[in-house]
Length: 127
Image 1 (cartoon, rainbow, N blue to C red):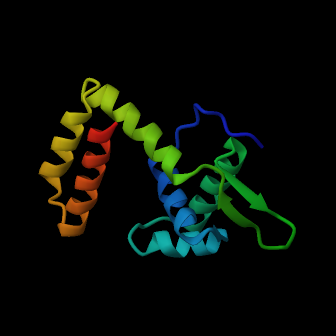
Image 2 (cartoon, rainbow, N blue to C red):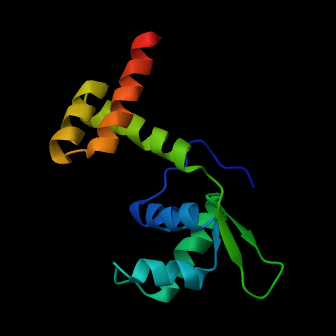
């Protein structure tokens, strides 16, 4: 099942995708248990969302055994790029500088994050 480039995961779908990206593969029950640690959602809600995600092509499902095993069908990186690109255009008037300034102002990076940011800046300057 091909994924349309225009498929934009909802916030709830992104929560499920984060679990699948971290675990690789998971059953609905496994995803539900992880989500339940910080969110009050019913098992049937998680099941329905994952079925919808399968229909959209956002996840793949192995139904060769009684218990269906799901995995993400879209990458974390491409999803992040799509969402950040849309955010830069719609919220920050196309200015990645404004996005970065806002992000750093709301979340103070630790030392290793600052080093990573500096490496990225240094690489961008070389281009």
